[in-house]
Amino acid sequence: MFHTLAVPVIAAPMAGGPSTPELVAAVNEAGGFGFLAAGYITVEQLAEKITRTSELTSKPFGVNLFAPGTRPTADISSYVQRVTSYAEKVGAVPGDPRWDDDNYAAKLELVLALRVPVVSFTFGLPDADDMQRLKAAGSTIIVTVTTPNEARQAQQIGADVVCVQGSDAGGHRGTFVDDGISPGGGDLYGTLAAVRLVRGAVDLPVIATGGLVTGADVAAVLAAGAVAAQLGTAFLGCPEAGTNAAQREALAEGVRRTALTRAFSGRPARGLVNRFMVEQGPHAPAAYPNVHHLTRPVRATGEVEVMSLWAGTTYPLATAEPAGELVRRIGAELTETINSLAERFPRG
Image (tube, rainbow, N blue to C red; front, side):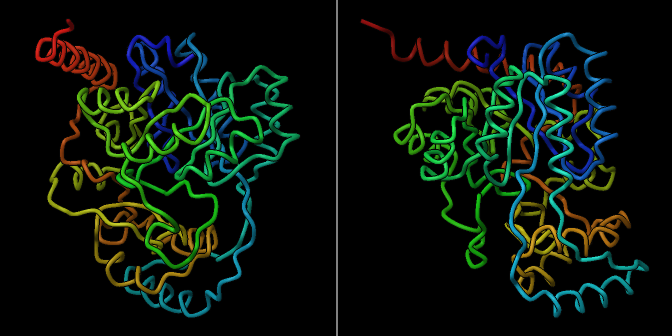
């Protein structure tokens, strides 16, 4: 499927609002491939998004599900106290630090019933029965991986494609298990290194993601063996994206550095550094999604210094333009890069 895209660009699933039916449709119509994010929304909301997307584009699109994890064992009581104190300062009431599986079973049943063409998983693996049911429904299965070992596990359970996430990526790390110690929850590889290592470990098509913004970036990962490039941060400034206004402004300013943190969700994620990340990050436990629910009302205040401003390392290179124009421009840049290299290194 991804070998035949007119432009080998995939709009990443971005939970929390940015991924909209309008964004997916615009990317599809320009020759790329778009994903809806099922995370953090109800089954009813997901059904509405899938229906709306089908109305806007006749081309296939994907849905991303959060693979259900295990209940965290970390003691979060001290962090609850810290966030409670912080919430009072910004006029918010902290949320209930509960564990849940993002209503995984019901969302899985929905994508099965609607026969979604492509289903991807983040944070782990579906079980073998779920995998077989999806395949029987005609879905292509993608698993997000961050290491060669995770890629091997994905191949063993029958994944069709792996999406290799490099450490430059914005948003949550797709690691299967957070070690609770290292900044990224485990081994960190740059995007090109991750693609090369995974390509050497498994016999599956590879999608590359992490810090990719330009056509030259896409050319680089294709040269490394990827079949397509998945971009997230690059689409945050598009008018079709549901990106928060405060985050749009912070991205456009382009002056903040990025860092990995557990401060907002209890799982490593890369975002723009702000006051909450600096002050709370060092104390945040590895307790997802408990911490996510705890801090959600604080983040919802819309104050830039307490929001989770997810972004990849190369975010200053991203532009604010319609998604279709962005895809077509990246396609043109890709062709230009390939032609330039062909002229510099002619065959024969």
